[in-house]
Image (tube, rainbow, N blue to C red; front, top):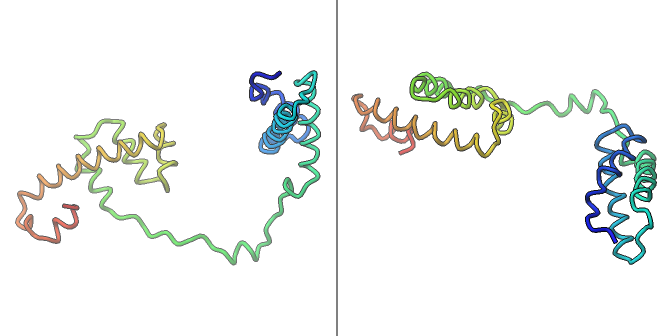
Amino acid sequence: MLHDPHALLPIAYRAAARVVRSRLLAEEAGERALHLLTLATLRGTPPDQPEAWLRVVARRSACALLRSEWARTRSLAQEEIQAQPAPFRPPRSPLGDLVRDRLATDLSPRQRDAIDAALHCNGTRAAARQCGMQPRDFRRYLGAITRKARSKLAADLADETFADDAAVQFRLGW
């Protein structure tokens, strides 16, 4: 009896990769072959040589994927591409640059990298990847930067004449 059938997944993947030459399709074929092995084991008829059986089934699954509609890609016509233009993205606010400039001395080099990535990337994942962080850690860095920015800007605005103005406080998020 198989103790850990998932340990055989790399064998199925390699066997399927020789047929399809596509990582995505090889992974799919390998997982399908492992699924069939699990079903055979649950039915009480496990193969005598599970690795060899898995290789054969993975190759057959890869061939079936190549024949199926699942593996075929279709190129889009120019009319379809032009019919759905990219969504409009408004230009970013200059407030980010203001915060970056005012906090330049208060931020660590890693935090400066994080704020630069946040200002220049489209999303959290892309910005985190640019900094070499996990998205969760990147969001924590942004939280720390936000707290520093609020305290620094609040201290700067306390000296201004319009510091008690409700519009100024609203912009700061108080």
